[in-house]
Structure formats: structure tokens, C-alpha cells
Amino acid sequence: MLAVLSFTSAMADDCALDKRYRYLYIEATRQKDMGNYIEALELFRRCHQLRPDAAETDYALGVFYLALGKDSIGMSYLKAAVDNEPDNSEFAEQLAQACLYRNRITEAAEVYERLAQVEARAEYLDLLIRIYEQQRDYPKMLDALTRLETLEGQQEEITLVKMQVHQMMGDAEGAYNDLKGLTDAYPNDMNLQVMMGNWLLGNGRKEEAFDTFLNVMREEPTNAKGQMSLMDYYRSEGNTSMADSLLYVMLVNPQTEPKLRVTLLRDWVQHSEQHGGDSARITELFNRVLTLPQTTSEVAEMHAAYLELKDAPRDSIRTAWERVLTIAPENVSARLQLIQMMWQDSIDENVIRECRMATEYVPDEPVLYYYLGLAQYLNEHYDDAIASLRRGAEHISKETPVRISSDIFEMIGDVLQKLHRTSEAYAAYDSCLVYDPDKVMCLNNYAYFLSCEQRDLKKAEKMSYRAITAEANNSTYLDTYAWILYQQQRYDEARIYIDRALENDTTDTEPNGEIFDHAGDIYYRLGMQEKALDFWKRALPLGTENDALLRKKIKKGKLVK
Image (cartoon, rainbow, N blue to C red; front, side):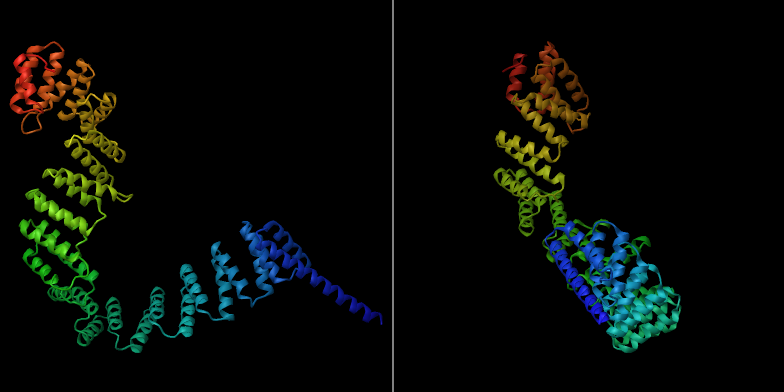
């Protein structure tokens, strides 16, 4: 009777313990889901005290401690969870991933092997293949590949990897058998036959390789990969004439992949240039290839570049770039090449028309609007120029080169200044200098225009000084700086820089009349009237911004307001 009572009491205690454990575990999970991680961790610890062999608690604690960066204790809990429930794939996968993350590769492989034994899943075998490849454990990698092949059936990708593994193990026979099994399984796949021929050629079995390539050519005469491999065979035998003949056949073969054709063509051109080849033959080859449908403009661009390299007639080069645009009208580089060629001939309405067409095909490219605006400006279409340049400015982005961004705003400023819209021009110059604070031409012109209005002379002086610091011998920039000093009645300093401007005024085809005119004004203010008059007289035949005023100064021998 006493024994029965004791057994019943033990059962009751165990039942109560289980209820308490379940309550705490559920509460711990609830707290974790609510984001109360400290409370949840403490509750999971109490669960573990009640049931040290409970795998779910070990797992929860393992995840918690790993998140806290306590790897050692976290990994021990995860391992305990897996040991207590070896068939639980969730626990095992978490342990394996934790091992991988901490670079404990060998332990991860052991866990994945255990998982793969319980359930042969492709994802486990894929991970094992990668692990063994990283460890360079080729026998185990090969075993995992074989198991994957058994699971998923013979596949080209798997077989080729097995073949590579055999190669890395130095097992040529094994690699051959892998590839032979694949070609036997798919005898009509000529690309696999080419692969076999390449392997035979690479392993010194040239006669077998040659027979294989010939068989491919008999079955598929236009097989580009077969042609490529046969060409390599002829080159290995020193038969360059046959290799070149096959290269030509490949280039004009419609089935040759465009990227491969471009590579082969580029190699042929380079080889021809290095060995003094016939440029007429290369040109004929380009023309023949370009009769084929073109999915990209690379071949046409290469042709145009080759003609430029060989100094071909300009009409031929221009026609070549036009052909590029026929294939790819949105090709900005080709557009610019064509525009620049036209620019060299004459900046006329034809250039404007070509630039406008370019913006229609590529409406978001700022540099095209710059050329359009510049062409319109040079043809005195000032309002059109401003409109085009401002459209270009609207498309400036982070990817736009700084030079283009600054050029656009500088040109806007120049056009506005031409129209005497000075406030707008200065705003444009300010924008230009935001993009490129050291753009010396803008600094000089902006400073000069300010000095002519006797406006913001200190700002003008700073900008002009930066310009002459950058180009110390530029006579135009030195003249601007001297003139700004003159406007501030700093005549002695102005004389120093106007003299330097005169000394350096040798780069142009003829001297600059403005510099002599300014020199006359400066010297006059310094009381050197005769020398001033001499400078004015030298300025007159060269031309200035105000020849009428210059004549009055010469006539009266003094400054005229």
C-alpha cells in the first residue's frame, strides 16, 4: 500500500513540474514576441532549470546567447538542442548556419552530413559541395556530387563539376569518363561534342580531338564553337593559314555570338597591326561582317575607330560613324564623334540640325544640349542657345561630369552677357563656379564684366587673382587684373600687371588692342601722357571695344569720359 501511494505521489509531482515548465515556456515565448528580451531570457533560464534536457529551451537559449555575442555558450546550447532532438532539422540547420557564420567550417560540414543522412535534400548537398570545395577536400566533394546526381538525375552542370574535380585531383581518366558519359547520354548535342574535343586537345590527344571537331563540322557546319575549337587545333599545329581561314568563316557566320565576334575581330585587327597586315583586307572584312544583322553597334564603332587609326578619308570615317548611329541612334559617343567632325568643317545650320537630332534621340544627356547651344550661339541664334543650354542644365545629375556642368552654366552666362542681361549672366557664372570654383576662363570673364560696370570690385579682384595664379603668363588674364586695379585707382599696381600683360601678349596671331588701350589709360593716370598716347595709337589699328572713344583720346591726348 505504501509503495502505491509513493508512485502516485511521484506522478503527481512530475505532472505539476510539467505544467509549470509549459507555463513558463509559453510565457517566455510571449515575452520574446513582444520584444521584452530580458524578461524572456530569464524565463527561458528558469525553464532550463526545471527541464535541463528540453531541446526547445536549449535552442531558444542558444539563439539568445548568439545574438548577445556570447558565441561559446550559445553554440553549446545549440549543440545540446541537436543532441537532444537529432531528428529536428530546424535545430540542426540553425547550428550549421551558426558554424558557417563563425567560420567553423568542419563543424558545419558534420552537421550538414547528419542532415543529409536523415533527409537527402539538394540544398544540404549543395552546401556540402561548397564547403568541401573551400576546404579543397576533393574526395568528399566528389562524393557529395555523386549523391546529388543520384538524387536529381544526370545533369550537364553536375557532371561538368565532377569532371573539374577529377581534373583537380589529377585523375584524367575519371574526368574523361565523366565527360564521355555525358556525351554518350546526349550524342546529338554538338556543343558537348566540342567540349569533348577541347578536353582531348588539352590533354594531348590531338588526333582524337581533330576527329571529334571534324565530326561536329559534318553534323553542324555552322557550329561557331566547333569552328573556334578547330581553329585552335590548327594553331596548335602551326597551320596559320587554315586557322585564319576558319577565323574568317567564324566572323561571317551568322550563328557566331555577337560578343565572340567582337572579340575575334578585335584580336584579328591587333594581330594585323602588329604584323603589318593588309588594311584593305581588314576593311573588306568589316564591311562583310556589317552586312549581317547587328544586335549592338560594337563592330560598327570598331570599324570607325579603325578608319581613324589608318587616317582614312574623312568622308569614309564620317560614313562609318553614321552607320553606328543607324544601328544605335541613342549612342552618345558616336553622336559626339559625328558632331565634332562636322564642327571641324563648318559650324553651320547642318551642325545645329545634327545636334538637335541628337537631343531628340537622347533627351536626358546634358553634353548634347551644350553642343547644340554653342552651335546656336556661334550662329547668333542667342535666344535658341539659351533655351537649349537651360534644357541641358535641367538634366544635370550626379553622374554628369563636373566639366560639362560648369561649361553649360558658363555658356549660359556668356550668351546672356551678349544680350546685356547682366544680372542673369552673373547668376549663371555663380552656378558655373559652384561646380568648378577653379574654372579660370569663367573667373576672368566674370571679373572683367564686373570691372567694366565698376561693380563688386573686391569680388572681381579675388576672382581675377585666382585666374592669374592659375595661368601666370596669360596676357588676357593679366590685363583683366590690371584693369580691376585701375578701377580701384591703384595705378602703380595696375602698371606692374599691364606691363606683364604686354610682355606676354605674344601667343595670339596679332597683339590685343584692348591691352594697349588699357595700358594707355593706366600710364595716363600715372602722368606719363606721351607714353599713354603711344599706347592708344598702337591700339587703334588693332581694334577695341570702343574705337570711337579711343579716337577721341588720341585726338585730345587725354582721357575722355
